[in-house]
Image 1 (tube, rainbow, N blue to C red):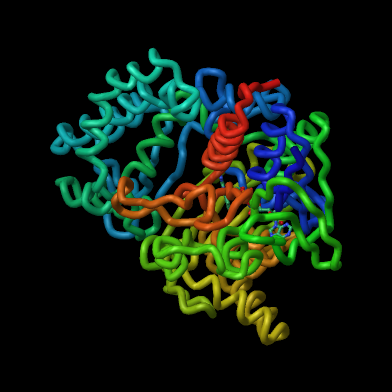
Image 2 (spheres, protein in one colour; image 1 turned 45 degrees about the horizontal axis):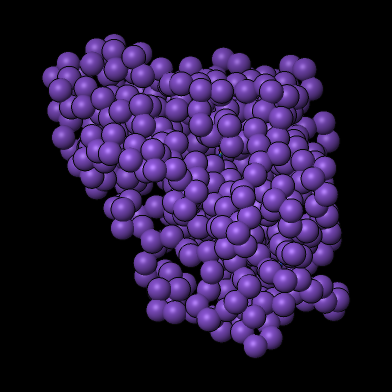
Length: 506
Ligand SMILES: Cc1cc2nc3c(=O)[nH]c(=O)nc-3n(C[C@H](O)[C@H](O)[C@H](O)COP(=O)(O)OP(=O)(O)OC[C@H]3O[C@@H](n4cnc5c(N)ncnc54)[C@H](O)[C@@H]3O)c2cc1C
């Protein structure tokens, strides 16, 4: 059976690999000349700038996700870095009892617990509840039955779900807690401000903090030395070694449909490529409303598209600097207040900055040098996308203006950084959108709703359309590489069940 896949991002490469393992003949059509999509890094002079991975769930053998990644690439060939501190947050208002304004989010849970209680003994009870939840998550990280879709689970696995009851009850109790509502329960002013600022002033479901921390503690959420492009390249190599074919520089314009059945792909160059099944692993909005002209929708899809159900994950303004010093005296990831509020050309107002210093990955810069990357999240990605389309000189002016402002702010925190800059790269939401097609430059698809359980994922098929499936980071709010891997694997299993094949991995 022939299957055409749109997009050689990690989703397209993953579904392609699993299908090849199961006897399907697949071909991926990718608009770029290289694989990876958002999982990208690029070279400028002597520096490699990274646009994606800071951590990957499943980087250590102890994690069930390690097993899944190992199905797609040789995990042993990658060196992972596990940081002692996830993020250092400089507060604006409060200092702790040691006169320190920096809040350190330790990745070791015991250390974090001791640190929090030492700073705020009056909050011991609630701190212990938070840490207890992280420990519970570790115990129930990925139930074995989640590895396979329901029809492929054994009775023993299904019954095993009962043992997850304590976890489920705790999860339901906490599912609506955000960093804001949690911080309101704290008595200590330093901790209260720290939790408010954990996501730079955004109100985010606390699970988004708790889950990764439980993995960081187990050293199963590391950063792969070499960065994003190398990681994606390894999956692409696996796909090709399984007999898959990637057609680069092949932009899809339409999905060809006859009698409500997907028949193939129409490329921008006018060529048509037919298959029994079509899978899109490209942007969800493009797939539904451009490639399929919005003909296969229902009320739920229209609600998602009008952003009434879920918000888009914010897009990123990423200013990357190749600098001639390693700045090892600074934490690898830190956030701090800016002296003066800054209004970006897209209207977003920033009074804090986020800096990543890649001094832990020597492969990205020459010896003694490093990359400093500044990320600014915006909910107005469309501003940059539209401006680039309508007025390129003004777009370039705004982009350069943005970069020079934020570099000036950085200089106030990291003295001498400005003089050490050898290369600058500015990626706007328009860059992400142009390169990967993601709607308004969204970094990870849908933003998780405050109520995680209410979040409604995209379905793998579309109403009224036969022989078509969707997979991608839009499938589950929050996106990210583990979601991409799991969604692709699930879809491959569903197809195997449908075609009465035994799902195998090789
Ligand atoms: C700044 C940033 C940091 C991130 N950090 C992390 C992290 O630390 N950990 C983590 O797990 N995740 C992280 N993510 C998220 C992760 O990168 C994404 O969720 C994931 O890479 C999405 O993969 P995908 O294949 O579903 O989509 P994409 O990567 O968007 O792939 C879609 C592919 O389809 C192609 N395509 C689109 N339209 C067409 C067309 N018309 N014709 C042909 N091809 C087409 C695109 O070129 C692309 O290759 C980060 C993302 C960003 C932006």
